[in-house]
Image (cartoon, rainbow, N blue to C red; front, side, top):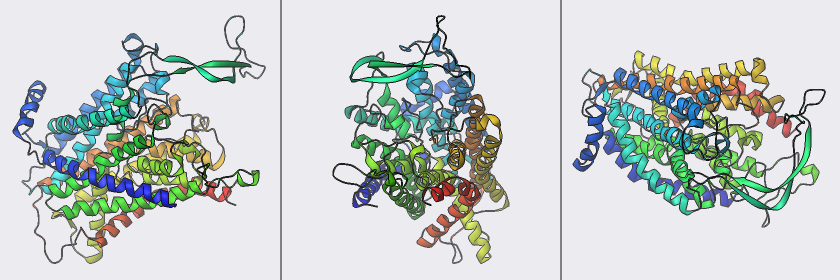
Length: 599
């Protein structure tokens, strides 16, 4: 890595630490339900309308059922909005109804905090659908993830009354949205708009270009229908244009929560590579900080709520170490460039006139360092927003985002999902350590017994099963193979990446795969729903079991869970258990591609 790359990484981590500290403290206040009276008075009318009492804590099963019902209703609403958008207002471009399979995929995607997009936002979704459907779910899906993290943290913190109460879901979602997501998103949206991110309700604008653009288009016959040749392929004709249509819309408001809630769904098809979403180096840095802000802050929240800040620092340290290693792999891989271009006389060396390295699919205004860091951030944190095309990364560079997702999205991870995913691995780590020293495993004074281990196994195995089984189905089915644009190892990587992204609720893609088809919309939609809620339900069951247990006192034989040894044990557990499932698949994809490229 170059000195500039190290400097950018250091600036990012320092700024993240400064911002995460106060946010973590505020989240701890919400998790502990110790709010000032004025905040309670503001909330009171909302609870009265909803018919709920925030002080009534729920059993974990009731909490889970409320969460599932809430998200199912949200998915139905987003689906209906897409299907009806042609008859609804705030549609200046006259967008028609979204196809049933695409609408299903998108509804599940945004409710599951995945934001996988098989469509182009500016050519598919009306302003009303973007705002009332997609942006609203950006808030609610993020709040759902944080609420689950709150429930698990309370399970560790409570002394145990045998009832398994983990909090009130409706109060958690309301408070997280009202006091955290909305205020921070509002400030971030103003900052982004000040840097040039657009925010309007204008009609799309047609402008004159500086140069004439030549292109080919389908040739129509006398009846106005496209002509086809003897092989059934469309007949093309040359054409030119001196105009371009620029999409408009309320972008800054969606961009802010897209990043803060680790959602990732772009207003435009090019996502954060689009200058209307991410115009400057400052907006690029702000967006990366927003992605990691709440995941990092929740680690500190965890330490405060359980009464031992060292526990939170240990989890945060494990995440940071794995993230830094990932950046140290992807950045040099992209800086090295493409060896196939060197014999052709292409200069890939960094100089005062060019950034050098593998610049395919990257924006000149960001360069290698900022693009590589963004790719690591967005896939470490289950965000899925991109400022470069991941399909154009080198084989090793592309494997880094894939591996970060395959670890279970626990390297910071999504809002809430990163913390509860890492705590699942922490309980598994102390169980393994307990077996090694012959003691009953316990974490933060709570015994990890047979029931918890069964639930932990389910939570860890859900996503690998979805990814590997889904990939197997896609590479065997004719409809799955039809979407592959690149043959060989890279085509396999495209499918593996898609299923990895969907099941782990990330949303980024290797764009060479044509996934907006009924087959992939259905397969990926199923993976997203089960990958989200198939993990959440066992996590809530674990939270309830822990909340019911008495907290044991610390003794001389208690395994310390806050020092360098435990951090190393936790990292080892994540790598061994989280990644080994995928090694054969990685060998068939990016590893083979790397060996072929550098042979």
